[in-house]
Amino acid sequence: MKSTAFLVLSFFLLLNLSACKKEKAVIKIPPQPIDISLTSIIPVPVSLEASNSSLAITPGTTIFVDSTSKELYAIGKLLKSYLSDSIHVEAFSGSKQYGNIYLTLADSIEHKEGYILNINEDYVELTANQPEGVFRGVQTIRQLLPVKINDSVQHIGTGRITDYPNYEYRGAMLDVARHFFSVEDVKTFIDWLAYYKMNILHLHLTDDQGWRIEIKSWPNLTAHGGQTAVGGGKGGFFTQEDYKEIIKYAEERYITIVPEVDMPGHTNAALSSYAELNCDGKAPEMYTKMKVGFSTLCTDKDITYKFLDDVIGEIASITPGPYFHIGGDESHATKLKDYIFFINKAQDIVHKHGKRVIGWDEITHATLKENTVVQYWNKAENTVKGVEQGAKVIMSPAPKAYLDMKYNKETELGLGWAGYIEVDTAYIWNPAKLEPEIKRDNILGLEAPLWSETVTNIEEVGYMVFPRLAGYAEIGWSQDSLRNWDEYKLRLAKHADRLKALKINYYKSEKIPWED
Ligand code: TNX
Image 1 (spheres, rainbow, N blue to C red):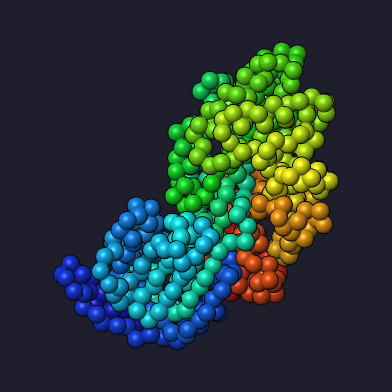
Image 2 (cartoon, rainbow, N blue to C red):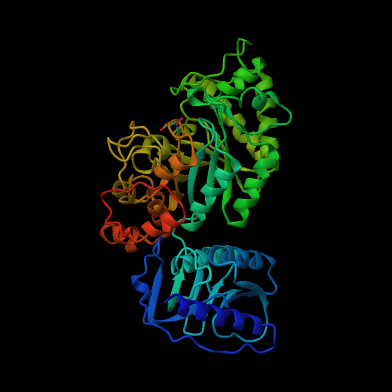
């Protein structure tokens, strides 16, 4: 067996060398019958027609990209990095040849994230309207092959997939405030999102227990406020350069970063860093416990709004995405009339800096400005108040979508206040049918937040996130009519090897007939 593999490999290396010459020797590897409808693609695509044959992807395969698009070249490079270092990426000109992958832009599909993947016995062709669509389609190619092909020969099944997302906002949140996570960890998280075609990473950057983003005009926020964490650990923070590195990594994967600075509550770290933000002018100690709802910025001091303007301005200026999240949750220490006054001002400041406001559902106590988005986590009645004001909604109902909830009573990590969320509970719900007054048209999409009171490293993050994230990705991307738990769990079962190969420490739920 080994020597056959060696022969095949040497043969392809030769073939590859001959690519330097004008005409490539075209020697086809006999196809095999592969039915791609049996392949477990998550999220399930809109339409899939299998044609029951195959094409061999080998070290001699070249990824050809539209020569007019720099972005496609970068996507080609990413596809190469996912599959094999031996594969080449080149600008396309001329005619399609056997054994290659072609990434192209065309008007063939309308949606900006949609794509058409056509695989025949001669080549793979991925077409989209925008580079973003090509990137999403690349994830489908990955799932039709083993996680890494390296120098092996791998058959990809033939057929045609037409695909586009159901919701435009499909995200997860990482709380880097309760425990801090490094740039590398955040990149890993971004890779996970990209693999399942999610397009939003919301970073919860500040809370009572830590301030995690450098603000040049208020340096003590991180010098003092970034130095601890829940349980009293050492904390940490992103410099603006770190943040830009995260932004760039996310952008290359067509993921929008949504920065959140939680206010006026959840602000003990800021209040501890600057005495003047407190109504009594006294800075409290840093806080390392879990219970919240006790802190508030002083809503009637001018300095508070200067602070907001500086913080929001600095972050907005290095955030290319359209959103800025102002938090607004659990401000139990702020009087309602002060809270309303504050949220109205905060919305204006975000607008001044050119961003669209997102806030947790409590912000609907205030008058929402044009374009403000409400993130439903706790109270439907709050969210409905937002809908009545014309706001769009991000669905993150805690009992369904909270990645920090335990799977069951045995789960060591996580919290339980919103109930246990087993893998089936996380999957079996429909954002547009959860609350009668929140309709499909009101919904921008969904987001699964991971609060980090109990998780301290990326292995623990992986355990809480997987496999639930794959299900949220499918709820966000796939058509409702194609979603079915009994069928999904079989597809998910086949992702065991993938999750393992991606080195994800996932929860082996007994609800899934894992195949590994
Ligand atoms: C509620 S969700 C919070 C967070 C906690 C989380 C723990 C939300 C807007 N506020 O401050 O971390 O519960 O599950």
